[in-house]
Image 1 (cartoon, rainbow, N blue to C red):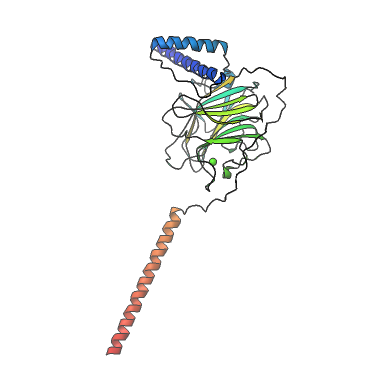
Image 2 (cartoon, rainbow, N blue to C red; image 1 turned 180 degrees about the horizontal axis):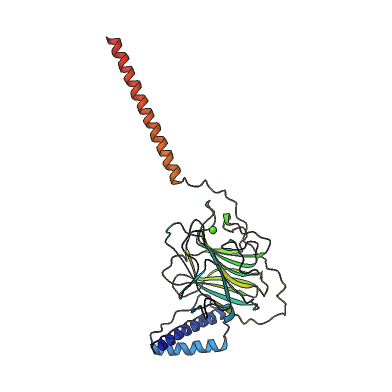
Length: 358
Ligand SMILES: [Ca+2]
């Protein structure tokens, strides 16, 4: 009985979350970009009113695509997640899908195994990046809409020279020299298989656009929205605990084919972090069709890339602790030798002056 009640509560909580997501999306579709307020579930009359509004939005615009989404509870049977495959260091718990733990040299990814045939969509990602590192942590996470799923590689745990779209949540500044943005940093890259993601420059030479976003080690939930509508890519964040989307960037003229796969990957190197995925929801957007187009054959392309930034040579790396220690030891030894020599010379000069006196 208690289990039934608990199950009912969990289902109801999930239902509330779903309807809240729908409410957010409905407001977003209505052109509101800065937007929904979280509604208290504690007040029953208010809740009933709100639920009736949410029902209206939900019934008329039920766009959530289950086959491209992953929400709690994750495991329907055994250790598999319906519609999703995973690789590398992925660990699934009741609360999150951990792509990498806060340990060095880990890499993990989850990939949707159903190709996306929807032309206009919004992907809402609930994620958490956290770790014990205060100043040094890395490397970050990527959200993918790509042709080749489950292919490990050097770009945040997934393959370089990819086909499709990559949204990078870069937590570690590889480029130590003065450059045009701080970290953590969110950026987008569209690739037709010909471009290399240059980690040494944090991908700044191939990015469409980007923004700084302090999403790491947040006390509250952190969300990312990737909206692709009429060849316009809009990336927004909800990372300040305000339950409101804030636009990170918008790029026009982005061409993406249908039939690619959604995925998320993360990697750690010498530095590490927990990279957790809590949910991924894909919504189909209802967009009036202006012209019929077979989008399955088009190549990924972008009309606009961020202007190339100056190549700034990195400053020499800061001296390591061991090197500094050896230099101090050598300096002390040198000083000792000088003092001993000085004392010997002084004693000899004293002795010779004494001999001269006698
Ligand atoms: Ca980086």
